[in-house]
Image (cartoon, rainbow, N blue to C red; front, top):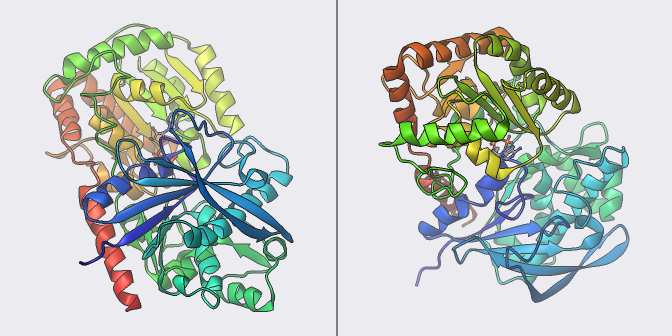
Length: 493
Ligand code: ADP
């Protein structure tokens, strides 16, 4: 009987176990769609201290193995769970020296030494994953690894080939979810950490070494068998100087496929979402959204007025996300009679500015600094508009979730935003796009949106319906991944 293709996902985040951003959503949802298409898929993650084993029914396993790093031999334990309501195995590697402290990316640690801690965490993870393959019951045809955090994995696998034959046939696929984060460290620190001998250092240096610096993502691009990113537009963008973050030439040479992310349409479903005060479908969205908006305005302390447009911002408060374009327009939005609700955390400057605005206009502006999955769902359902003024946006999930909940995106035309939002006026419009990454550019798009919301309710409803009817599932994209896996595997034969 023909054996199914076996794919091992390796990543730093996975919903519902731990989530910082969209990467977690992808790792927690794409495997279902792949399994439906006959792929044997498993997920491998670090076991962070922030993970509460109990609600996720994590079990210890009898697997245990050794990993050498820093001149010491560390023991790695393996825990196991499954993705919810599935048989898809999720393995967690336990090694407290590297994984127990803090949250996923050690974001709360600002001391210079935290950079080194991050390097040690993810360098160790790559090596431990390479070893784990030998010790677990998975024999992957393809290792599908994600972002710089796992960037050392293909070379770690290659270094094992001379001594262990099982590694010779494994192919690697890298997906870049965010090119702005690359993991750049002094080569001598990484070499020392791993205790690389001359041969090993030569292997690594042949790939990616610039002025004594080892760039994990650059290494990953060069050493992997195929590279993808999370939307077709972003795949074109990152091969240009404006968006390539110095990797554009390497990416042009290597080639990169853009495969649009999907979302878990069962989880992000306004007909089933337990976080909502009233659930609704496309047919009943007017009443459904009105009830959710009322509850939200009350909860957030905003004036309770169904007519006032409520604008949400949900996400990491990072430079990438164009937050200052929103901040620059906040007072103007208040003057227009709109309300703004922000949920997110990130750069302290943005956090402080947003909190100040919320304190100055408590009936119009709300800001919650932090991560809150339930509030995010309530905002997607109860708001009228979601703003995403991103400087770059590899895919963006927020706009897709928003559209599914009947909330209209106002977004910058870049990456996956350009691939999923059709701008008004157009018969299939589901949102509003703008091009210049400036406060004026955003204001122009917002004023158009407010104009249609206030004066053209029929057109607004059509835009909402178009958004709610869109297909944001993994169906099409999962097929593209399967095709890619088969192509790289065929390449080895
Ligand atoms: P990125 O991966 O760049 O952070 P995406 O738009 O791809 O951005 O994905 C962000 C995901 O994280 C979405 O599911 C969004 O709803 C969620 N999210 C971001 N910030 C928060 C927050 N503060 N609270 C709850 N959910 C959040």
